Image (cartoon, rainbow, N blue to C red; front, side, top):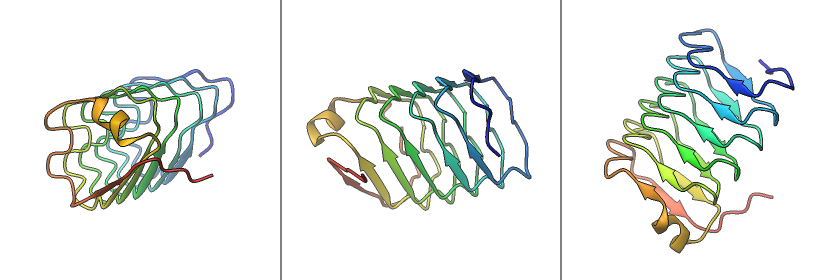
Length: 150
């Protein structure tokens, strides 16, 4: 599914429980993915997040158990609590270098997680405010710094 250009926010619970949704492209016009926007979209495998999203709110992708990878663009500054909670198939995450906050249990239960690719330096990564349990029950991942996929 491609969300129409001109949409500025994916509202609270907009696609909550859409179990047949398998992919979504979020356009550059979107600046906010609100709480529970894709909550329990259990068949969601692919998400493309537009380059102007600033906030991924609490529980935005909670329970998207088929999601295997996600690229969080450089525009994102905040990843809310439980944002990717129990995304059990999530193997790889790319995180932009403008993230300043990763919330409580943001990647809790992402048991397949093997790779976090961070676009900034290790010093920047260490400066991110992270809840003490942001990665509880996540897989045995490695972090790559200065990641550039261009």
